[in-house]
Amino acid sequence: MFRSLIKLYLLVVLGGALAIAFIDHSFPQLFHDRVTADARDSTKAYAFVLTDYLQRHAGPERAAALAALQAHGSEGFSLLTMRDVIPLMNEEQLRDLRAGKLVLSFDAKDYYLPLPDGTIVHAHPDDTANLGIQIYAYIVVALATLLAMMIWVHYHWRDLRKLQAAAHAFGAGNLATRAQLSGKSNIYELSQQFNEMARQIEASILHQRDMMHGISHELKTPLARLEFGLALLQSPESAERQRERQQALRADVRELDDLVTELLTLSSLEQGERHMVLMKVSVGELLDSVAASIAHDVADRRLTLAVTTAGAPAYHVCDPKLVARALLNLIRNSTRYAHRSVSLRASMGTAGSLVLTVEDDGPGIPVADRARVFEPFHRLDSSRDRHTGGFGLGLAIVRRVALVHGGEVHLDDGSWGGARFVITLPPMSLPTADSAQAA
Figure 1: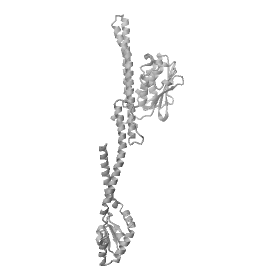
Figure 2 (figure 1 turned 120 degrees about the horizontal axis):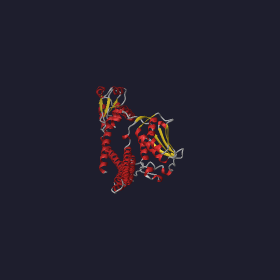
Figure 3 (figure 1 turned 180 degrees about the vertical axis):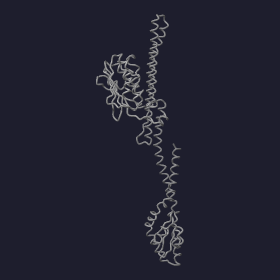
Figure 4 (figure 1 turned 135 degrees about the vertical axis):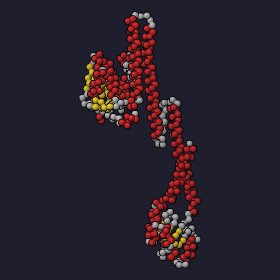
């Protein structure tokens, strides 16, 4: 702390000294006219007395009178002629002298007073008598500056130590640690950024923990079935029974493969926009391709899928593979619970956004569970069976697809009494050649 204070103080003192030197040497020249006018006003009575005194001592007596006056002060008087001062002044100063006005030199340290007879009195006041006072004044200014800086650095350093302690505690594993600083603190904005960073890191770590817990839980069942199936293969059974066992094992392997695929998809979406391939797609063709790819599943369940694009924009910029994946997940989710019908609808939202709605006539989802259905591995109590509820990753992927597009997804009551999922995708721009090359 003290080292930082000394460095800062030396910089301030050096800057102040340079500023004072600049003011002393440059301001009289920069504001010469104003300084001259002020000097004329402040020395008007003095100039009148001096002129009257020297006029009464004209001729040979003037030099002796000026010497006597010099003996009572430190003005450094001397008598000059117009020819003597011409090299020292510019045209404006010479014009003022001829007009009988007091003239200051460019550094404001000498003044020239013209007398009625053409003689010019030159004076160079000696300021050495005030040097001691100036030194004391500068010392007082330096001490006041040091005191102000010590107070400022004290509170600044105190807040930095609080932020340092919060960072140390957070790094030690206390993820709930936040920096508590006053809104008047100099580093309040920095503390808020630290708190936001800590919040995001905590959420990410907790999310990863939940993911690992969910993954380990999901892997146990198919692995246990595989282990049990392999053990049964060792027992003597009929060829038909053996084939059934092998088919069951293949089904378990496919289930593991599907789970890994879902996890990889969700992981890539967690990386954000880097994995997106934006292009201008036809909304109608996109919905038709989604409906065609799931037509067999819908028919097997004896359901009807209605696709509507009335009022939707003809084209929209998005990643068609990701959007199609999200719609397929929603439709598959709806087909598990729908009684007779599922609908897929596209419409125009606010500010040119694309709104995609998937609705079914099933039992719906309770309001208390709607906020959690988009969490990975979350299943409702009524659908804990993996055959019905899947892995619990489909809706999490839907949410990530909406987020990477800058949009959102929400769940509400459908007009048929079932669940209605609504994805809102805001308008996006196609990447330029430079940005695509950088990516």
